[in-house]
Image (tube, rainbow, N blue to C red):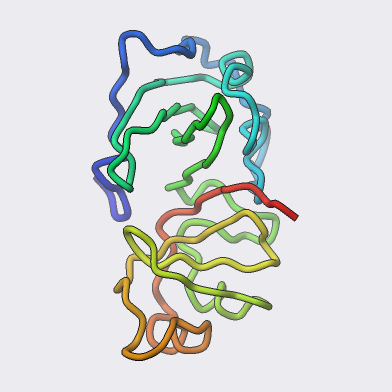
Length: 185
């Protein structure tokens, strides 16, 4: 395991997986050249897309039920994307969340895994909130993206994590996961 990985990052292939596990490495998932991530996905791997469409577009490595971060079982489809593995969480047959744990995928302005917290905090409207396994930063400038930082979950006593306070205390911390949750504007 590398920094930022969790036990939920391991892959278990179910024998009776509903989606076809792809053998073809020629499926690119719509990624050519430098892959760009945005608030709705990467290439053809898009938030809200029917998971039934993915085996025709992307190399599916596994499709299984796994214990999620909240302790409940969730469907996880792992795909090969631009030479990296990417986990997708599926709900009601559609991609609900895409989890990026590699530096290879970046936004058009180069945000991604390893982006310093201070850079997120400096964005207009940046907010930070404790989550189930770290602190998450997000900004309207990058609607649909959430940047995870391995930091104390609790804000300072009697307050919240404001962009200024968290940047002053942890500005050099680097994002170790980017969640694509879909922009709902």
